[in-house]
Image (cartoon, rainbow, N blue to C red):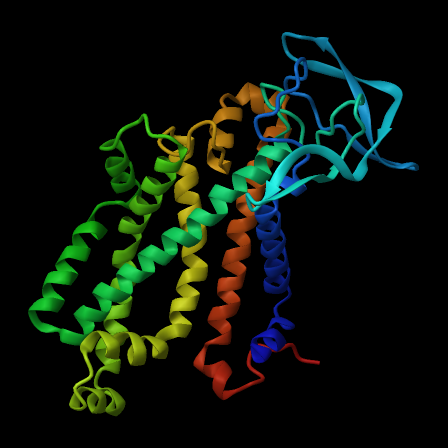
Length: 355
């Protein structure tokens, strides 16, 4: 870890990406504290309210706005109607991790003043920043859970195919190729369409995770199979076989640690792919449904027409978060790939800036 931290000093993009991801996952874990309201809290008469937080000489303030056209929801700012944004303000009560009662939020406004809309409001007058924060719980966790399940299947089937070879290898590889022959998106849509469309949020989350995992394991399994097939001829594996150690223990305890660096890179590059797949499903109406919220469902619900996008550009906020997470994981994956490169191991100065 010390070597990797020193290596990150030569990769500013990876360093910034790691800080961004850490901030987003911290915000996800304490969503109730960072979000000023509940995701279902609606403010009457504030449909498509624009962002109202401004930096003035008095600090961060909320400027009041009034509707001048209720058809197009056009607002006009009220001059000199500024209200201070307060930090650690008392608001709606909640439970941290579902256990500890708490009623403080990171920021907000005093009671009786206009609500704070950092990213504006949606068609029902709900705070978009709050919904983005709560939506990150599904969008950011589904990538890791689907990757964990997919990688476990890849290690199991790829390890068995590479270790035993022969008919076992042939059957597993033909089975994986069956999944790989069908385009991933079409296979996901087909599997999802076979299931009920009346599932609740928890069932949808579980089903989407399993579907993404089943679609994602074949490619990784072929990679693991090739690596295991080459490592099983090493002397320490032959010695373990002579000692009568069971094959599964040899695969998981002695072979897999030898390819751990490649698996770490695979995880870093797979997570954003699964996040994008969930977003695609939710955008097509086959993913997360109300009352739960994810970034994909926000994009589907709010950006329904080009007119909405043109008149209310702040509705694109979930898209920027999605792109940021995807780029951050890719930059970290590139850094991990360079760090575990054999040339970097042999030549420590490889990849460093010249002074």
